[in-house]
Image 1 (cartoon, helix red, strand yellow):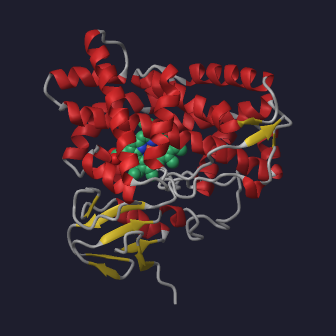
Image 2 (image 1 turned 45 degrees about the vertical axis):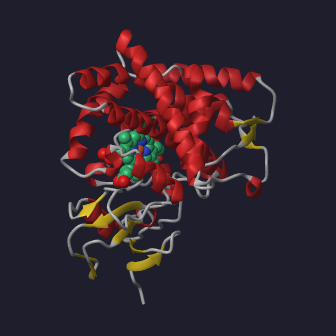
Image 3 (image 1 turned 90 degrees about the horizontal axis):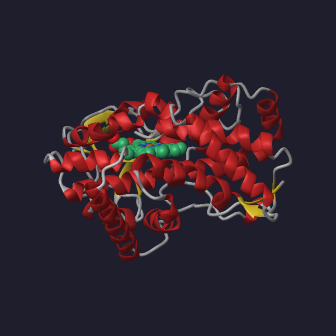
Length: 373
Ligand code: HEM
């Protein structure tokens, strides 16, 4: 018998209701009776490291309104489509320069460290006001925090190191403000709108979410296109902005790198898909399964770059819907067509089954991806 809302066992032995259908997932993510507050007892964290770091250092990702809205509003403008679109020419120039350097180097080479990470890290660094020279430091600490394969104490240590790094930047911007997100937040902190701890945690969230997620999508999306040559051919034959935008939405749906589901806890009794969920019970909202629901996407397991996939749930839904989605979209819309135009013979240089996938990380992706061209 089909049970679209069923109980599942979590890594820590706890139970959670898993919501799998597209309509139910949207309904749940829009329902204020489900809380994102990780400090509530019984909250279904992804793994022990996430539980340890996010409970100690709260960000608006794990707060409810009105606290969540108050903090999110402080950075909404910086990530709005209009603002982010203005960065497109700079992102294009940066990606072109990266490919120049990458293609002049030895083969095979790693697409993750050569193209994916430098695209997303440089973009978010510039927006926030973080020196890009420090990218190896913040990339490695972020990788540890979200890996899911380290002891919580190691993840906490990496978190503290990132916070100290960001504290140094905040002090510098206090002395010499610039046109960037850190300077803007320092101004708000000086006015008393936000405390220093909250500010550092928010910056950690923006820096981490801003580079890791998109880098994962760049590598996995490239891999998916290489594995579906007939789809790639269509994109090559018509790299118009509309076609590219549609392809990016379908890759986001098909790959759903936010693969561990959105995590929530019920604060009141409610009913989802015919199932009663009681106050205090944990919920895993499976946006990955929703993205493969045949009622929302016919032939959902087929990668079809021509389908309209704009209603996918890879960025979540409701008040916590991804703040950085316009930025992620612009980066992906620039990278894929540029990469395949500039390197027409791009190919995988290792067997698929030997690739190191980020199976346990908060976001799915690849640790490395050897390619030749
Ligand atoms: C929230 C996915 C890129 C910043 C989220 C959520 C998802 C998501 C699923 C919702 C979390 C929830 O409901 O519990 C993604 C994916 C990305 C991406 C798949 C890339 C392909 C980015 C970028 C940034 C960013 C580039 C830039 C800083 C955030 C922030 C939140 C968030 C701050 C919290 C929003 C809130 O709680 O109100 N993201 N994200 N993300 N994302 Fe992204």
